[in-house]
Structures are given as structure tokens and as C-alpha cells.
Length: 330
View 1 (cartoon, rainbow, N blue to C red):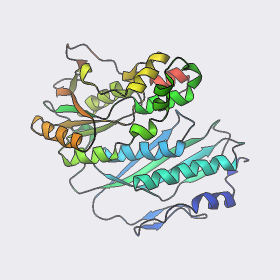
View 2: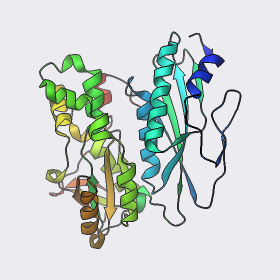
View 3: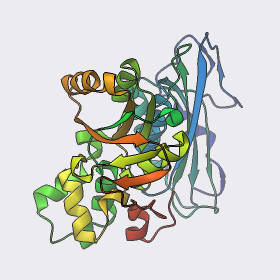
């Protein structure tokens, strides 16, 4: 494909299979429309934007899931999605169709409607990039901030890490992983499907259970996620490293590549804060719903993140996936 807008015929072909929007979507993704229009009922509109730049595979699914996670950790149900798709010159119609098929299946699986966006071919990028924007609605009075953790709250990890990092590294650095057991490598490469990287349902359940803080763990892994919660909340988090929940194939891939799992891309894991009197019930409910959950630490007066001995846990300057792959991050 040449630079510029994607041909109208191709755009129509990839948009037509999308499911029709619900009644509140007044204007959806159609050739010729410049914007989406949505009727919004009472509540708080939550908007999240995140680019996908650390992988060249399965961009559609990554973009939908990562942006849905960002909305869900506020306690809002993700509803509407707008992607910007940037393609390098020479991209083929087959590649565009595959990317949009990923968007279609991912939005359908998430119960999300693709309502608009933009697609073009540009020499500004050397590989496909998807910048997603997800919108959702939180019920009145039900918004949960990252910065809601208070001294005395317990920090619960829901879901193992590093799931997303395992999948990206297993796919993008496969030639450097010949020494890893093939079954382990297959499990890492398929981690997007099992155990998956969506935290939408556990986040919404945690919100119902009285979470004071919610945060999805993404770039920079568990270490960055903990620091982000601590910084947003104005507290120190004391962590028991032995309590962390790990995705074993991800650990194997990290070991083989010399990556620190604490700093490795970890979509699929969630950090939730609970007052002590609510934490035990939350753990039981999350476990009963099929989610791995454990108390990882507690919030104290102060700043930063430390282990149980008071030793600082560094805030990674760069995600291990970006370092290992030699990319610029994203």
C-alpha cells in the first residue's frame, strides 16, 4: 500500500464485519464519518489511551485488552474503542485485514464496541503501530483511583506475572530460546490465550469488594506497578518478595534471556488495595471466581517500595522486554 489513507474499498471491507453498535452508539465506524457519537447516561466517563509498540504480532488483540484493562481498573466497565492504526509503506491488504480481524474478535470477546478510529499508511513508522483509546462508564460514586491506597491497607496481587512479557519475548526472541524446554516455550508463546492478559473481570470484582486502589501491571513489571501505586497514593509499600505470584513459563524465558522478571512487561496481573478488614473476604471471593490472589505487601507512611527488611526495591528505568529486544519501549 502507498502512503496516505487506506483505500476506501479496503477500509469498507475491514469495517463491514464489525458487529453493529448498541443503541447508544449514534455514529459508528463508517467510511466518510469523521467522528463517533455516543449517548451517555448518568455516570462517570472514563477514558484511557495506550499505544502498542513492544510487539509486532497480534496488535489488534493487544490494543483492545491493554486499553480495556486501563479502564477497568477504575471500576468502570469498558464499552467503546477507537484505534489509530499506523502502517508502514508496503503493508499489504492481507496484513490490514488480519489486524482488523484481531480488533474485531478482541472487541467482541471483551463486550466492547469499536466506534471509530483512523487508519493510514505513513513513512513515519517502520512497522505497524496501534494507538488505542478505550472509553467506559463508572457508576456514580464507584470510581476507584490508583492513588486511593492508605497506610494500613493491604496490597493484593491478582494474577501471575510476567504473562505479557512471556508471550512477547517467546515470539520476538524465539531464536535465542533454543535451550528452553519446547513445552515451556509453547506455554509462554501462547500466554495471551492462557492465562491471558485481561484483568477486566477481576478488577471489576475487586471494585465491588471494596478495593481502595486498583492498578494493572504493565510496562516495567511488578516493580514499576508497585512504585506507581505508591507514588500515586503518597505511601510506602512494604513488599514480601516471597509472596509474589509468578507465571512459571515467563520465569523460564526471563532466565534464558537474562531478564529480571520483576521488571518485565506484566499485563495480566493486577494490584488491588484493601483495608485489612476487607482483604480476607476479597481473597476468598477472588479465589472462588478462579483468580490467583495473594497479599503481596502493605501500605505504610512514607514513600517508595521496600522489601520486608526495609531495603529499597528499585523502580526500573526501562522495561526488560524493551532492553532484551533492543527497542525503544512503548
